[in-house]
Image (cartoon, rainbow, N blue to C red; front, top):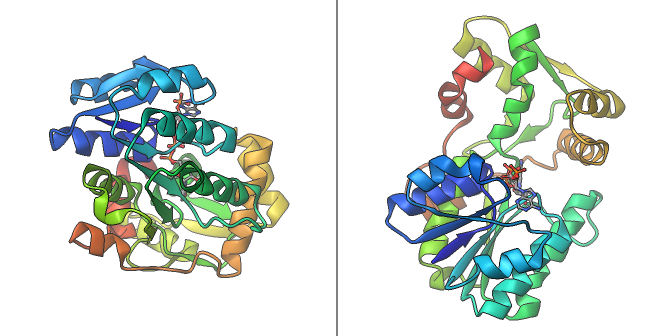
Length: 280
Ligand SMILES: NC(=O)c1ccc[n+]([C@@H]2O[C@H](COP(=O)([O-])OP(=O)(O)OC[C@H]3O[C@@H](n4cnc5c(N)ncnc54)[C@H](OP(=O)(O)O)[C@@H]3O)[C@@H](O)[C@H]2O)c1
């Protein structure tokens, strides 16, 4: 049995792929009403909370491998690692980002703390360090639909953004047959770096009207995210990440997705076409 710790973007897509392959898969969710489609797809849905260790222990019964994906609060994900070690789980696949102990963004330092967990507990593991997800662009969809434009503190920086569906496909493939991936770190990206001017051009072509990108300052972008409902602390870290993007921090691509999947990584053009209705 494979346990996927949450049913967000990567978790839900990974659960579906595993269920399609007839792999026994369980998904832990706080609200089972949000996971009805996953249950219909064949997943075993369990109710729990990553902040409640007893609920994680209950979800871990009979589990051989874990997909660790969540908002990456260190105490919560380390609860999962400890429960996996207690249950004798054979492998953890951890979704993470550009993490390091001395990163300028707290979220990346937290990821680094979590990444060290499986090794400290002696659980074989694989780290999937992804570039920004293309799905982040969907956060601008309401603004684009309303104003034909969007803004960011990313300046002219380019991002090797990856489709979260590809991250899920890599995750599912590894967790279903993890032995060859123990101790490995993969850097997941899309096929090429994309700037926000590229995003605007792709969306303009797709939607048949001109979409304009505006460069924002740090505070301007942070305030816009807060107004859109993002918690202040998260908006601050996001604005930090976008400011680093402006300096070239996200301009990396690798061949890990095509190598692991045996097909090209999805392009931003493909992603945008698949989500055209959201931007219209
Ligand atoms: N976004 C990016 O660009 C990016 C890039 C690289 C790496 N990552 C990494 O990807 C991971 C996030 O993956 P994602 O984007 O697929 O997640 P996501 O779509 O943001 O979904 C997070 C899920 O976690 C659930 N959740 C939150 N707190 C929980 C708790 N205490 N107990 C149980 N479930 C809880 C939420 O469920 P509810 O519905 O109950 O709230 C939601 O389903 C993070 O490690 C992040 O750093 C993201």
